[in-house]
Image (cartoon, rainbow, N blue to C red; front, side, top):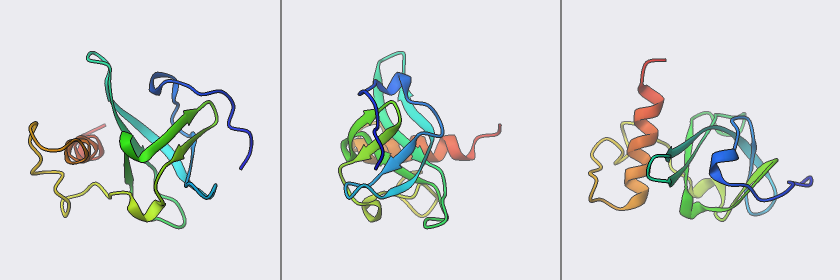
Length: 115
């Protein structure tokens, strides 16, 4: 893994930033940072599809070890990440549900909205 630079806030994390597993393997790139900036709540990141993983994945904030200028370091292996989609609990998540399910729902909403 290359030098990731200084630690940053989720507010400074850019799309296209590489995402690394705990073993330093690059698993993809940040496609979107999921957050409620008005309430200063960071939910996690949507990771763009890659050669190894052909679908979007969602890394909840609790699955992220640190955010850096030039990389996101996960605290879990890539296999532990969720795939936002209709086959996940994303669509059924309620505000009172656990934070991972809420993040999955928001990731799904972001992925399917018209652009």
